Image (cartoon, rainbow, N blue to C red; front, top):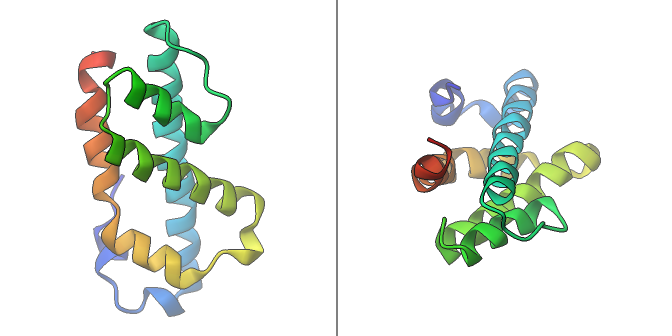
Length: 118
């Protein structure tokens, strides 16, 4: 998934089409991380999480991710819920800030869990 044009755009806050694209891509990227987390918990016989956010706590407990990454990904899972279930209340400035500062969370997660899904 390519983010650079959106990430570097100064015009993003005023571009409704780009914001909508960024929100959709966040949903897809976060749901992919959730799917991977749930796959690892199931394949490794870990306890079943009660929520999307808790799936990352389970990975932390089992040593697949560190506590800081688990917390960052829990925030992302909650952000996904806001995007999906409370679209009108989403602060576009927050979307822009996350886009510019938090995309590395996805790479950190991929690196952390790659050995478990290889």
